[in-house]
Length: 222
Image (cartoon, rainbow, N blue to C red; front, side, top):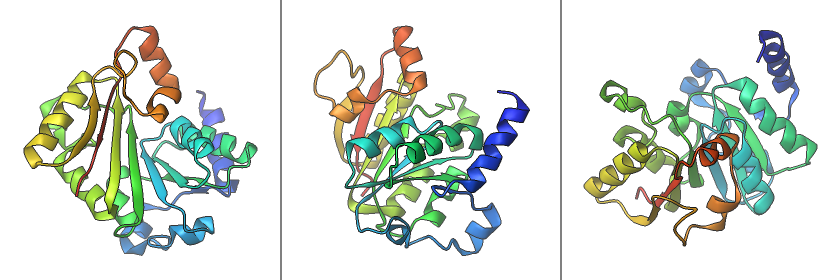
């Protein structure tokens, strides 16, 4: 994507009613929407996050499937996030918002028990050992998710990375956390929830064309 196109998208994001772009300092000082996300949506429906949402395909897809929940896609890349935000506005989806910010700030953006579910879709597995701290299911991130998720809240990890799948399963077992469901090839083995099978991201379609198995884990952090 050319830099001109990126700048155009950044400008458009500023005009979108469903895009929030707080700066890091403001979040650290106290984010005004923390604990008040239901006010933003104007209802008391459960809040679901997609972390590292990219173009927002899962955020928008889930929102269409379930109008009785509010969905927030979070990513730092504004030019990608623009696509999901624009689609949501074009389709008049009132239960969708996008946050352009760093995922490690998630516990500063949402209050205790404010979130019902978290989706992590096709994250960078950060395979090198020195990158462990950046893995989105490491112990430090799980602690952040626990802070904001309701006690019955669900986590979903969908990835093409067998490494990430195995790493996460091992960590969850080690921490004694509840695993509701795990599948190392969702399209070959039966039993995955429909939202895992029916929604496919741009990258997922590419992985499937290459014959890569798609994995999924549903678990709890409380």
